[in-house]
Length: 296
Image 1 (cartoon, helix red, strand yellow):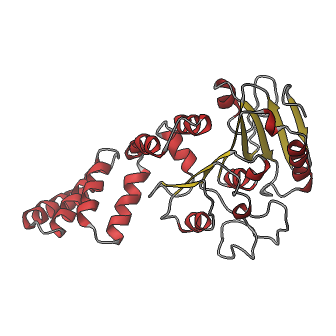
Image 2 (cartoon, one colour):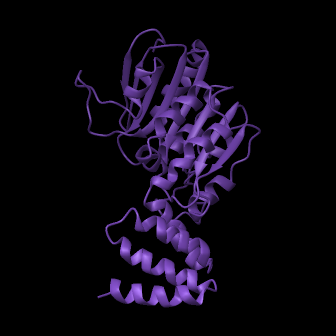
Image 3 (cartoon, one colour):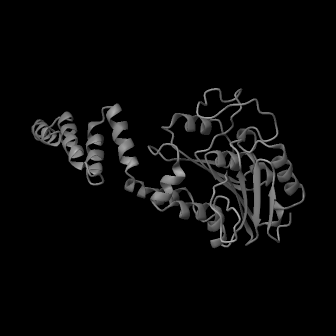
């Protein structure tokens, strides 16, 4: 498995596909999607993006929902490590989302000094470590590569994006600790952040910047301001404000939603009522009239 020529390895549960490019290697993790390239071969997550940016890419795709828990996969990756594959590159970046984020974290120790980009990842599915995880089947996992919390000490930088208001993702993030760990709390977007970042057209710039080492935290937050374009963001913040009786915030989010939705008149009506609840009696009368009209 040379760093200088394309290759592909298949195990029972996984596909490893490598394409040489520049001195940056991006290692991506995901489940295998049915999409195939012009050459008829399956394309792992981030395949075209890496090639377009001039990077080398090693795509690792699971064929089954096994969270990269296969002895043959572990053996293949250890052979790459022991054969100096990762050392052939100036910069190695592990990346993935959700279960792919788990893969990016848990295999980071294969290349000391690597960068990790993990988007709403799990840290493990070992039932003895995360008995509170209810979304996925838990197991009795044995080493190696069973727990991301054990594999991060040698990573130079770990960018972990998650919604701290989404309890399960927050609890996985809270389990992790490493000198290079940087948590990027993307509040009120829930699980599935990669899709949300794609919708507001910043997934590419974020992945490019973190992969090449040209983006810092301040740069990320500058890009992330465009989250307000997402309907799910003000909708989630609207619900968050209501649950905590923050009526001024609920009013602002309602007015924003009114510009984004076909049923915007409903949100305008509620906005006036929330303004009233914050102490404006005249707004209450306006809101009541608007609400009655909206509900006809």
